[in-house]
Length: 214
Image (cartoon, rainbow, N blue to C red; front, side):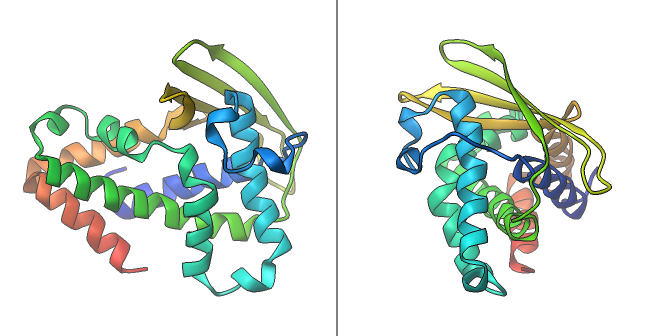
């Protein structure tokens, strides 16, 4: 998986898997308040909020990608630590990057993931299979929550592991693994290859070009 297009498609699969979660039991008053949620609640809210918003305002978001992305920015992005995700994906070269390069890459990586998440939230707004959410490893500063999605409508069952860290008294997602395949690890290989060929700025330009096509 070496191209930006391949990685975008893999993230689409990841986002589809997350958005197929049928969540229940979280009151609306907890939405958009990440600091109040435990790891399991956070997994539930990030999905329920997006799907409910899109389903209840289907006409508003139809053929309106900018508005859909704005919704994801407001309601979903706070639950993801994009800077930490970018750092983990870049790995060793992150230490040699300037603050400006780090900021630029994080911005482009964030845009790529949010746009794909927004598109998938519309495509799968009413598809709610049976799921099981299990806290696998909850510690003081890090957590792993497993989501098992049953087969539904011709799709095979999927196991999703959501990796989180607690910073500033709130939990945020830093990686998603679908059937054992890590989002971060997949991007790390592609990022390393691009940096080796064209440097850190070349990686930024590659993601910027990918984002500009949409």
